[in-house]
Figure 1: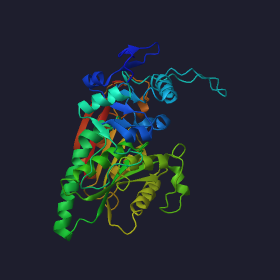
Figure 2 (figure 1 turned 90 degrees about the vertical axis):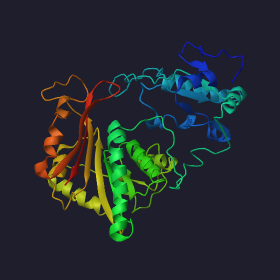
Figure 3 (figure 1 turned 120 degrees about the horizontal axis):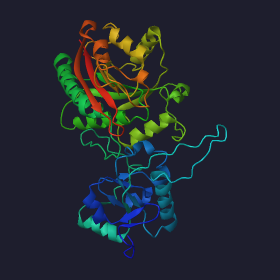
Figure 4 (figure 1 turned 45 degrees about the vertical axis):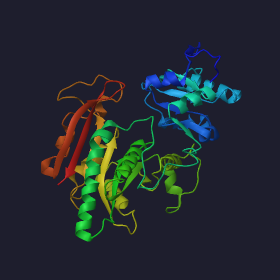
Amino acid sequence: MNSNQDNNNKDDDGICMGSLEEWLTTGLPLLDIRNHDQYAESHIKNSIHIPLSSVRQRSYELPPRQDAFAVLICSNNHQEEQEESLQLIREFFLCQEETTINNSTKKKKRAQKPWMVPLILTDGKITRDQAKECSILVEGHGTQHDAPNNTDIESFQPLPRLWQPDSMVKEVLLPILAKRLEETAAAGIKERGNDDHLYEIWDLGAGAGRDVAFLAEELKATATNKRVATFRVVAMDQRYRSLQSRAGNDIQARDPQVDPVEECIQFWKRRGIEYETRCVSVHWGNQTQDHAQWFRKQQQQSGTTTTHLLCLFMVRFWNQSLMEFLATSDTELVKEGTLVAVSQFAKPHPGASWNFDHPKEKNVLERHELRQMFSTDRGWCVLHDNIVTDSDHGRTLINFVAVRN
């Protein structure tokens, strides 16, 4: 960092420059947007690396806009790149881009809420010396891009992340799945002498695949000190249409900027979980027959491996007819022990109003709608049924888990 620069100097654009020592007092996560070579040479321990050229494309790896984080940019020796970094911070993170108008609709582009970036650090000798003194400087260990997270399950550890998974996935579903996989492995050894079956966890409406990544990482890390059954977390979404044009399992290299499947694959590869995850393109129908055909087809996709469906979960995704189909299906399709987990907007109590513009009230669950759908009479046992509040708008959501008896 330039020693002549006034630390904690906030310019007219709201950019506040600071030192590593100041950052250490904040407890904020650190996003490193230097290029791959600079990061490979040295970086701060537990920082998250997204190079400047990829920040916009990989915005799904950023935290919610109300969660603060600091940013590390390149040194003053790379003046042009440093200016580009500061411009990105102003325009993208702080949302100071000029308002644009869509020529076809004549509507203004909706103003975005800025991210909270209260501190910017500059790379340089002073910053590195301070990091070395604090034993948080990592030197010459490559980047997440060039040297992905260790895929060896015996030493695997989840990488630091700015983003957070859904609270139901993290706090409710993960412990249940970890326990089930451990119990299943023990039962497999007892019954067959091995635990060579594969157990799949389906995320319906997976989007960018963050919840898939979280579960795959955390469950893989569990396997470092416990025997767990072999698992795979499957992302299912209509946005993965490019899969339909790929022959068999031949995953060709595509541009992740325009191909959401390739984006997911590269995201998971960077985090060392490419073998524990896969994408499936789906088209959600609205008829029971459509759902039955889709369900059978997905269960036949695993080839010669003996595969079992362990869990289906949905986060802020809802298809009424699909849920009714799952709840009422016989045990030939939805077998005993299958988990269904839901995190969805719901009213906090019977008769409550819904005072939010998004989502519309017609898309909000009634308080006991899921409990009635996955009832004892239909062969289900409710394991978890709780109302929580989201962190940004105060909307209520239901965290719900049921198991097929």
